[in-house]
Length: 233
Image (cartoon, rainbow, N blue to C red; front, side):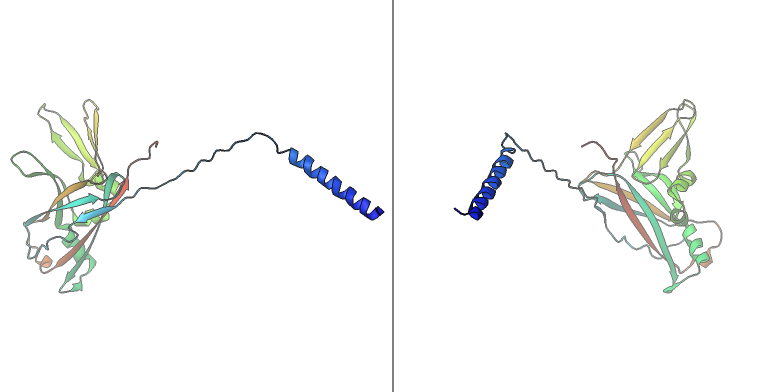
């Protein structure tokens, strides 16, 4: 055998030896385990029925117009509260009117938020606010301006009750004598609905309001539902 062949065989044998030695380093017992995780987010789906209310036409100061509709949580997550955004546009004979007149009209159109009762009355008025204030005030300002209400109890002392906006949010009652605080959390659970009852009122100031004749106000309410607080799952 030539020297070249001997050298070639020697290199091959050495390479094979290295391969066997290297392969031996992986010869041990082993096992594996695999885990997969899935994160599926829920949905917040808020609908209102009906989407268009019955028109309120040919109204005059002193008139009132009750309206009811339904908020629907058609998603998979509970809603802690529902916020409300108010917008309006005022026209006369199809043409937009100046802002001062539009706002003056909106200041005399009140919305009363109602609560169903089991007594002689079909409902009680929780509070009322003009459409202009409802449009312009922040939730915090609105709570301060229109939701503070002084009530006399049978026991003969007063307490303060207010609603912390938004509508389907948190109610708080504070007793100023004893400092007791009671809370009620409301919202709309997934798959459930909430009745929403309001009454619009054209305020009668007792004075001439002729400049408010023949005006049309298109009101748009946008409801926004928010999730409940995060929790351990």
